[in-house]
Amino acid sequence: ALSGATLGELRGEVFLRLDPDVPDAVEHVRNAAATIDPTLAVTTLTDVRESDRFTDVRRGLYIGVVVTLLLIAASMLVGTLEQLRERRRLLAMLVAVGTRRGTLAWSVLWQTAVPVLVGLTLAVAFGLGLGAVLLRLVQAPVTVAWPVVGLSVAFGALTVLVVTGLSLPLLFRLTRPDGLRTE
Image 1 (cartoon, rainbow, N blue to C red):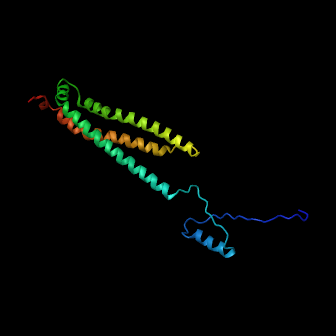
Image 2 (cartoon, rainbow, N blue to C red):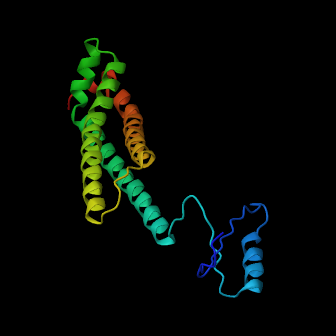
Image 3 (spheres, one colour):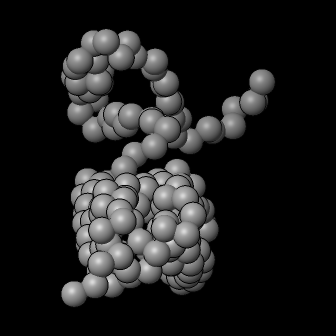
């Protein structure tokens, strides 16, 4: 069909689907290929291949996020408890004139939720913006790992709930009638 034309060097590729339950299947293929020609290359195709360095960096960032949120939660808890103690008499007077304790509990929730909401909004906006700029600098495609962003926001919401929950016993103790007494 080619009427005497030379084809040059021929090359062949073989794709194999291996049983994932066989632990050394790839090594068996490499050994078989080496018996045919020691210079044959055997590569594995996977959906995603991730560098160990990148995995370590990501793990370190997750640990940093958790430690930072724990420090923020501790700081918010101390601040909230101090504010409640400073307002002891005012809180007792509010309950004495008919304000429900549930309403005061909601106010404590909002007191912790608003700063966290503002902080999370700014952190997500600036983090995504900075990440996009850095990815464009290295000419990489800009992609957002939404599960990671969602997990960070969920940890922030959990922080608000934990701080509010830990401050409620003090709130209810301070709103008793004996809080109206002065020294």
